[in-house]
Amino acid sequence: MFYQMQQTIIKTAVSRCDLRKRAGVTFAILFCLICGLGCTHTPPPPERPELSKQFYNNLLTAFSARDYALVKTGLQKIEEAGIEDKRTLYLKAMVALIENRTEDAITALKAALVFDPEYAEAHNTLGSIYMQQKRFAEAETEFIEACSNANYQTPEKAYLNLGKLYQLQDKNEQAQGCYIKAATINPDYFPPHYELCSLYISLNKFELAAQEAEKARQLSPEHPGVWLQIGEIEKAQQNDYAAIEAFRQVLELQSIGSFADRATIQLNLLTNAK
Image (tube, rainbow, N blue to C red; front, side):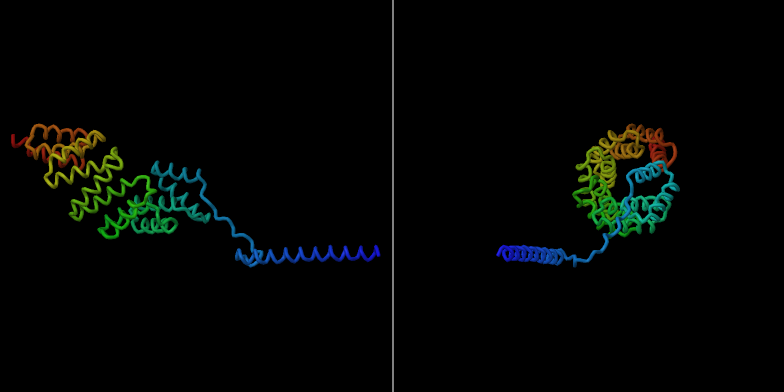
């Protein structure tokens, strides 16, 4: 009798063990189906090589030092290593622009945008290229894309470029709005004040031009273009002596160049009139 009880206990234990095993197998199969793994033991994909922070910083240092040959060598090594990074593609575009390889720059910027469609700096730069090529509709699309990116750390640059684009098309009201927006975002940003001043001069709004010229002068007192604007405003308001002093200041800051040439012409007109 004891033997029969022992056999019954053993059979019961075995049955319970089998049930547990079957339940475990069933659960494993269900888990694989739910997760879409198909229970195949495929090896994980190899890790994509990444750009080291130190190497990228070295590239930036070389770029800042205008050692473009070194930058190109570094970029070539990155490509050979199979590393894909939007930042290096942007840097590649910058080198191409410096070397007047515009189409190569466009290709690199578009490749960067494939990695990150919201890469605002790439949109802004691509828009600048299109603007120079007078592809105004495409440029506007790129600038608006950059302006509307809430994560863009310097949206004032995109608004400035959008303002220039509108001004090129004689859309002065839109241009004014963009310049004001850029200056509002960053009051210490010199270019929108300078561009606003030029716009107001072209529209004969000399009081508004004078206000922007003063803001620009405070931000960049040694910029010859600012003093040229001041001279033009003073001359338009018939303040000849103040205009002469402003044009002379231009020549002190820049003896040769476009600003100097324009200041010299104005000085000759004013001094000969005396």
